[in-house]
Image 1 (cartoon, rainbow, N blue to C red):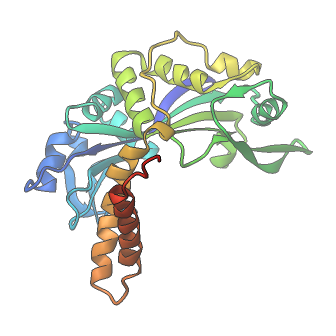
Image 2: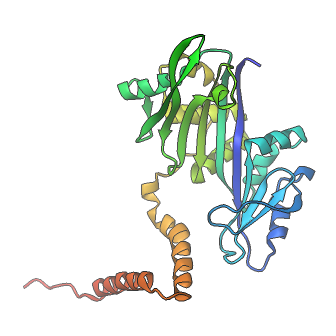
Image 3: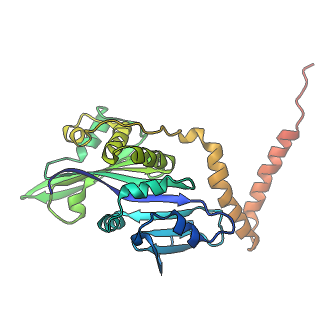
Length: 299
C-alpha cells in the first residue's frame, strides 16, 4: 500500500524484581494481559547481562538467575508486534503496561514508512553536512552503497544521526532494498532508549501515537527536505524533556556501574587474579587520604 504510515518496530520495558519473588510471578503480573503474551515454557537465546530467556506466545523475557537485583526485561521485535496486533493486542495496551508503577520503558523504535514516492535517503546526509539541517545529535554518517535501476546505477545508503550508545538515534534507509524488493520504500526510524524511551511511552499513552512519534522526530532533527517534512506532518504534543547524560553521572555510577563492578569483584575472588580489587583499593585509599588531609592554614 502506497502512502505514509507509521508503526512501532521494537518495544522493550524493564520490571523491578522484588527480593524473594519468583521471576515467573513478576512476568505474569507485568506482561500485557492477553493470551499471546502467556509464557510458552520454551527457552530463548540469552542476551548480554542476562542468563535466562523465557519465550512468550509473541515476545520474550530476560532475567538473571544469579543477580536478582538486575531488572527483568520484556522485549518485542517488529515481527512480534505484528503478531500481537494480529491477535488483537493493541500497542496502546502494551504501552500502558510499560508505564505501570513498577515498569520502565527502555526502548521504542518509532518508524515512518514512505511508500510509492521517491524519498532519497542521502538528502538527509547532504543537508547535515551543509548545515541546512539541524539536529541535537553530535555525530552523523552513512553506510553508502549502489543499486541498479532500469539500467542506471544510483548511489544510496543508510543514514545514521546520533550513536547507538546515545538515548536517541535516527536511521533513514531503503526498507524495500532490505526486504529484497524493488518497491519504493524509505523508512525513517527514531530509536529511543532509557529515559527518552520512557518519556516517549508516557506521551504516547496520553496522546495519539503517530503524532507523538512525529513530534519526537521533529524535536530531534529539523530539515528543509520536502519529502521528509511531508512525512512528519502532525499536531505537536508535549513530551517530557530528558536530562542530558552529563547531568546524570552520579545515577549512572550508582545504578549501572556499581552493580557490574560488584559482580566482577565477586567473580575475581573465585579466580587467581586480584587486579581489579587492587585497582579499586588504590582509588579508595587515595580518596581517604584526600578526605583526611587537613587544610593548610594561612600564616
